[in-house]
Length: 312
Image (tube, rainbow, N blue to C red; front, top):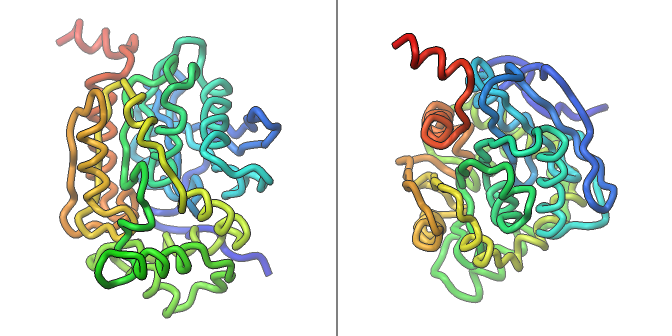
């Protein structure tokens, strides 16, 4: 029996793409890409996190696609992108460059949005020519650049070697997650979401996360365990906003504050009270509003914008 990979109804059910395509990365990895919204609208690129897929962005896609061209893709091994033997931050950067090249015209700018490992993808690719060509601004959402395991709050207790070791064991488990049960929902909510998350939010995230193959989840956990992208933060020279939930146990606010201090052009930090790690699902309106604000401030001017301004 095929496991349900996302919810089928409600605000977190993924909308149908206008177009689907395959981008080919530097090592030949094939990436599922989809676009939504009008072709002549300002572009937004959404990069999901560890164990997720394009379905994670359903609320943002549905809202933004009314007047933006929204591009989303499945990270290698996630969603509809086949698994690859190569799992590294360089591979993440290669993949992002491949997606940008496949979807944006030469010199075309977009606002890039990365959640969790997606934000790490933006940091890993910060110095790449393809990113510098196409990035107008970025939003780093519920993410960090280093010390992910030692700073995580998934395992209660005092900071130190014991908690770090236990956290690494939990996050790096090879065990299949199995079906989405009431116990599984409670565990997922505790680890990744804020206490006020609705059952619909928890269900949406559980379906996506449980659909990620155990071998893929484990392979990428090893990359995250030793992650050090502090140099990538310093190389991210475009305007960059940071967003985090105050109840985030996976990448707590200490990471957001460190990012803000290190970014060459930080244009604001948003801390969402009571929100956990799955901020685009838990606070869809707030995340979408921040994306829209970045497009307004730093995105490309379109013919539509010019006509509206001329008529004002």
